[in-house]
Image (cartoon, rainbow, N blue to C red; front, top):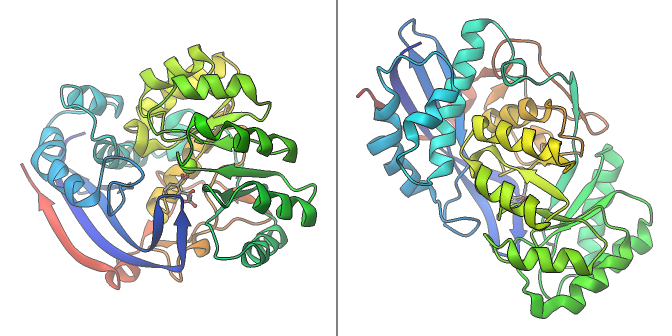
Length: 369
Ligand code: OSB
Ligand code: MG
């Protein structure tokens, strides 16, 4: 296939509720939907997951857009591409900018699957017909409010509850949750808010039978996480620290984590995610698919990657309605009792609904060379 044109549909969406992590609060979500159009006029879709500000990682949407327009778009236009794995090779001389790279690569994967008449999941080698999902809950002003949110999500049947923690909102908050919900599959995500100086807090979290503690220490670190994992029995799960196949390999070798959260954008795309998947499977490190407050295109990509065999833990791909009054795809992603059915339609398995997208559209820019 040959990509003739790439459209960057830049959207500004507003989430139903503010979402608070240890690095900040957001309710606005700038989303870029990448549409790659080939010589037959067929379109594949990807979604860029970088944030508005470089708080989760170094990438941010304004910079990502420059990277897409200046490098990653032009680099694939008019190239003969026989398999989407080739996109990573084309991008190789250009360092990092993983979310930018992944957004175009994802569109090429969707296009490839559609041209073959297979699902995106099948194109990746995934076999599951449905995937288990949990939900990620942001920090709330009070424990009572958080308990209310947890109650709603338990009621909706999500397979596990993840709550965000930060210094001052950790041990006592989790204790209260466990008093009300002693049995639910529960985990915490610190988004790198602690250091080894906080070892007493991290050790105190060990008593609550948590499924895992996600990214307690600095983004990028694998040394201190290895030291931490030796001192606690709760599995450490790495998110921000796994930003490439190489960092995944190093973390596994050092024993920095017992679980990995894969985010396709963070590691540079589907090809890299599959490489990490295969390595982790060989080392008995279970995976789950994280989320970046995606709109529907990103959600469907997440569902597809979760069909790979070693994604054995529930991911963060909750229903479209978790964040959006109206998503941009038809049909939307729906989790019923914590299970999302994988569409049997080719590619991502749903239509990108330009009618629905219109209400969020700031502008569309087209790359042709
Ligand atoms: O750390 O997993 C994270 C959202 C934005 C940035 C980072 C993270 C998150 C979430 C929400 O936890 C996941 C989702 O529901 O999309
Ligand atoms: Mg996380």
